[in-house]
Amino acid sequence: MNNVTLLKHPVVSDRLTTLRHRDTEIELFRRALRELGFFLAMEATSKLPLVKSRVVTPLGIEVDSEELDSAKVLLAPILRAGLGFVESFLELVPRAKIAHIGISRDHDTLKAMPYLNSLPGNPEYFDAIFMLDPMLATGNSAVKALEILTEGGFKPEKIILVCAFAVQEGIKQVYEKFPAVHIVTATVDWSLNDLGYIVPGLGDAGDRLYLI
Ligand code: URA
Image 1: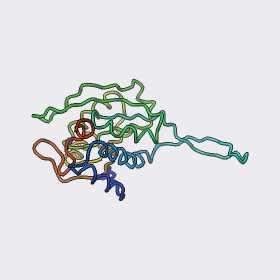
Image 2: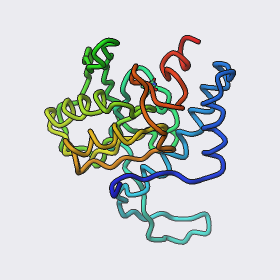
Image 3: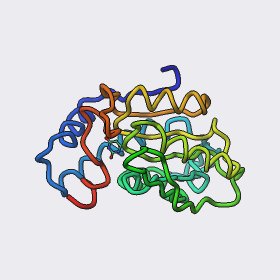
């Protein structure tokens, strides 16, 4: 797992527990996912380039400084559940652009079926692309979204896949096709069940975020 970063932090463990718990109701679930998203965003953005600047402090002293150009960040949330991380990332990179990627999964074949993509046409402009999907399960949706991004001209080495829950099957599928992509996750769970759900996981992330 050389290109996988696994978060380790007591607050992360606590929020994972909240998300896993079947009795966690919608308001708390949303909040826990958003808070977990802050920690993932902190890690995922840790290698963003800085640009040199100079500021004058209230003491009238001019000092060499550095700042982020967050307009050069692209967030690519995979609908629906990826939307749960958008606010967390915007706290850190407030001028990031957002390209929604809609992918549903066929419940019988588990195949990923794209239905929306609002990618910008200037891929070379961006320093980093954060592909947001709380659940890296079979890897089918992630690979499909990566195909959409790379066909749109985005370089795999600039893409970071940010998830909360991952399993080895999904990680393996992503790396077989896109070895240069970096994955940041909060946990690597046991396995997948026959329906393609992560075990123990949290159930259906989109349903828990929007419907239950
Ligand atoms: N998507 C989900 O929402 N949950 C899973 O366990 C796997 C994929």
